[in-house]
Length: 226
Image (cartoon, rainbow, N blue to C red; front, side, top):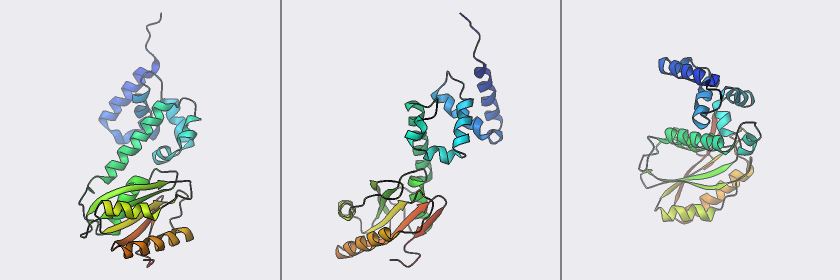
């Protein structure tokens, strides 16, 4: 039985040495190769890293890829898919750090940052709601629904119910447009108007509705839609 070590062992060691010296000098595929090495320590992950980046040009594209698409790539199984899901969650929480419960949301930029932290890697539309107290301090950020690439079913009753349960006095609606255009659809406007009417009747403030799409965003409040 051969005792010769696989060629990638020495290669991976050299990559780690380069990482220690200057991480910024690693190519994207080398960064991904090292990361995948933690999931598949006994395999050469360089071909898979290059294959992924050929299909998905950026790390963000990889993290936003649908599991079904990833499963179709040779060499990817549940372990790597779980790892990428964990990696996306890690970055969502990193972006969200600093905006903890009781943080004051006093600018659209803070709200957009919070929204993007959760929705930047999503390939399907999701609808979330931010709940604040009477001083606009964050008391909750909850996913209401998940849908398709261009629609997520929303039930105003659920939003209002959660607002009352959290004793919130204000709500901010948040959802994403995976297609890349942040402008609201007719359905978005109608839903916002309906939730606003219900909120007012119960003494709740609808502060904004934020739509995020890639690097763009749309604020109903800033555009005079509320």
